[in-house]
Amino acid sequence: MIAVSKPAIAVHVGAGRWSREQKVIEEIVELVRSSLDAGLRAGETGSSLDMVVQAVKVLEDSGIVNAGVGSTVDLTGSVSMDSGVMYSKTGRAGAVAYVKYPRNPVVLARYVLEQTDHVLVVGEAADRLAERLGLPRHPGVSARVRNLYEDAVRKIRSGEVPQRFYSRSLELWLKLFGIGDTVGAVAVDKDGELAAATSTGGVFLKMPGRVGDSPIAGAGFYASKCGAASATGIGEFIILYGLSRKAVDSLCGSGDPVSVAEEVMRDFTSKYGGDTAGFILIDREGRAHGVYNTQAMPWGYATREFVKVFGF
Ligand code: ASP
Image 1 (cartoon, rainbow, N blue to C red):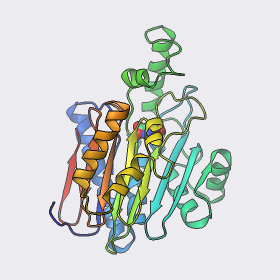
Image 2: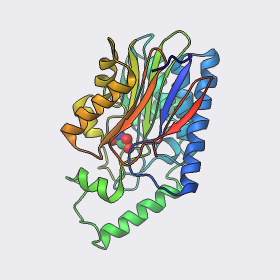
Image 3: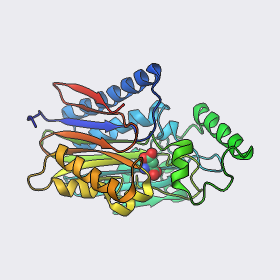
Image 4: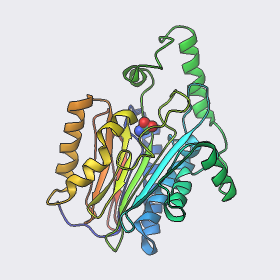
């Protein structure tokens, strides 16, 4: 792999099934570019933590992916979100789970990392914290997600899909409704410090109360002096495997992001099957790679010299 300049950043907008429509592809490519741009701009004067939070915030604000404003809904039609961040300079992580109040869960996760002694704060208490901090409020279920939900409810009620599919059938979830559009970013700054951030509304039609991998350090996100990773896919498998930590730890030593990511993805797939996950990985040299075993996982990679978008 060639050497690249720092700062460097990669972002993803979720593993899953993605529309092949040209209009959708253009919209997503544009979004990935804006997110990379915001992250790189933050890296001109700031840290990799600033970079990943700014990049993910752009994705959360977009309303067209499953995080922040565009978050998907659970079986009862309500939004609950998870997000986590980690920073190699302090070796600390901060995360929030099952939050409904903040427009930008990633900002609240950063607050937990920087301003508390905790790693994970959840539910109503986390929402009250967001309110007390004066963070902008989530605008409620988007029209796009409301339409998807109403369509799914209609299919379930009409018997077009099995009525009890949701409680014990992740595979079926996947076939019927797909996973996807969770977002994440990994970055290295001028000083060689690494950061990772992930944010999601979780899997569509999840059980109320369900929390996935995205706010679990080592599963949905991880950063150390060796590298940083952000994962997406079926959270239950990602937690059990410890996907982000496995990928980052495998970089310590002589591994490069391409061979490490491909090998970890192969191993994950051999255990949990295809159509289950993907992740992005960056090392301290700023070399990044994205892998997935789903139909697609739009992701982008940028330094001052180039911007690239892959994954359709
Ligand atoms: N990993 C997320 C979750 O399980 C979903 C996704 O990546 O699309 O909550």
